[in-house]
Amino acid sequence: MKILISGGAGQLGRDCTKVLAKSHEVISVDLGALDIADWAAVSAFVQDVKPDVILNCAAFTQVDDCETKKELAWKVNVEGPKNLAAAAESRGSRLIHISTDYVFDGKKQVPEPYTETDDTHPISYYGLTKLEAEKAVAEGTDRYTILRTAWLYGPQGPNFLKTMLRLALGDPEREIKVVNDQFGSPTWSYRLAEQIEKVLDADISGIFHATSEGYCTWYELATVFLGELARFYPIRANAFIPCTTRDYPTPAARPANSILENQRLKEAGLNIMGDWRSDLIQFVNLFKDYLMKEVA
Image (tube, rainbow, N blue to C red):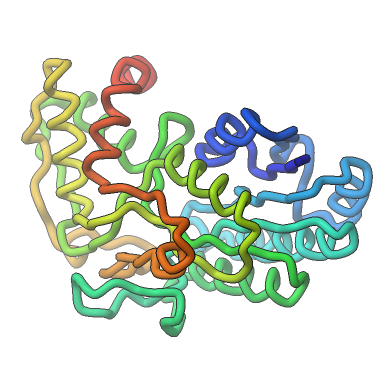
């Protein structure tokens, strides 16, 4: 099977390339090779490559920046997927598109999770663009799969874990405030890539949730992560102190509850996502040296 991956240089795109290239022909591109917001470029590229599947990992994910760079956010997050859907439809390709927990308002009582049938109501511009992208994909082609995920981390690219490590190493004596009243399921990008392969092989359509099992707060995630690294390196494991969302205001509103339930994957017998803590421990064991060298 020939698979075109857009956003291939991102943390998820790279892991998808690693996983899918074992069994498929993968063409991985990023903005330098293909601007998905350019319809003419997308149409010509897809007609030339003739992929069986288009996997869209491209997105403008800087949530706070989306509040001020709305035109760019709309182009990348809405026009891009719309173009990919149209190109997939004209070519007869299948489209797999990555979405987010930010399509929900997060007002459910923790620990009640959001399922695929819950009403969407984004509270940030980023969330709005991702919801509009879902609509554009569904309207643009019948052969689509949308996977909503959350709290992604991996060895490549910027993410929360690397930011926390950088802060902790930059000033070992500093007490770093981390939000402790937002809940979600930290998801390893490699594990999600394996889940995408499972979905790809099953040829299922519609909207699915795909996050790790279990949940925690940002503060708990940072503490567990640094605690695991402290087993191998002389790091102060108690560098973080909990705070509330009100104590740490940001330009974009965040859902207080980002817990997603992989209900449809489980119903289809396709869910391979494991416990977030187990995945995080494995991730640290595999990439601890790389992370320390990159952040240092």
